[in-house]
Image (cartoon, rainbow, N blue to C red; front, side, top):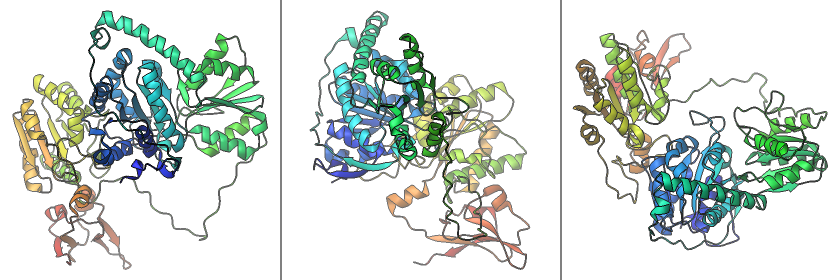
Length: 627
């Protein structure tokens, strides 16, 4: 039995924040879960996937976040409790249905998890999705710990059903991936089948109906404001005359800072977890009780602005500070030391930050070299990029490379340098059309298999219809690799228990109207280069599906062992360095010898035996791998 299905109420489990969200949903009787994987939310879907078979709930990896939200909404309006999870930029994709779903509402509890990524650990921006709650007029909860993540998830279903509205649950990377003690409650038996009761005056928002439903939404939002004011997730703590207001994960940093500085008796804390609608009555009480207020919140000054508006509305002139040059930045995530210093400054304390602990025993330490992220040894994407670059070099052509979201975005780095423009999921296909139309430059766009299913197909249809001329390389490694090897509609190597049919990428490309479609294995450099040459020479819209499995995924799924390795022959004297200068496999590197002569070395522990290097250099030869 999966640990998250433990029925022993009162037991304490050590859970990730994302795992705690899953447990909270199970305790609320969730029966329907959807997601499109994206860090830092991926573990939510991954755990639902693992437990779906033995829990009775339905789970799917949807093709994108819009589809995930619409599918979950279909269950929720049919009386089945549903949860939909995604990373913060995923909510941009789902924003279209979100705004109207707020108007029509739901009949069973529905929770939408948006996992923000301050500091952009694995994202292209660090947008603050609390703004979506304001834009949609939907309730928003922000847990500060794994325990609260469980409790708020369960509570969100109750709030959702009380208001007949979906509820947003906002986490951040630090909360999603923290691990904490969680006391579990009893599991609720899920209602897995529902009935859709027709009501076109609610669920079909043509303008006349939408005007009525917007009025209903605003009325429900005011009810939610009252719920926020009495919510156990919102509280005023302490009796001091200096106010500090905080929400989400930074509540922990504030609590630690007050304890470390020994100023609990000087501070009154407004601790918020149910943050939208803003609990105005509670905030007024807080503002009236203090002389000045410091607001601690990551990213945008949303709580700060709410407090300022509330103070002004009620004629209160308490100074309210938050974002500013001397206090907190709108950039990046916070840390305990930063919060402690800002509070000390705000309280005008004589404060010397603690010196870092000296853990260095060696007086002359050897500094480790900087190691940027890199495509893995044996990654088929590297082979594809190398083939494309080789053909361009042979023909003296310089192409523009629109790229997309995935581990293949690392093609940006030297020596491959195969990325020139990136906006969001699926943008490589559409932007390639724009660049090809607006310039006379050859354009070769790259997109991954999962990303193609996510949002690349519509761009390809647009390219066919508008007669754009570029080459689209679909990098098909058989999995959604960047976020943890989740399946997608086109997988060939299927995880245990995965019985869903596969969808052919090349068939989709042909069905979209692309007449020139080639499928190659990028490990075979000769055939891959030939396909690239033909595509460029045609000066037409061309699709090349570069298909080879992600070696890490293949090894994990099939328990595949390395059957061969390679060595650099003794005749190599590094006069030619093409292998590292243009291919750059991390298993291959220069090895300075003590006598001053440098040789090329293949690190056998990194090499997976793909065999691309032997096609690049005749001085590299195979060797037997011991059984």
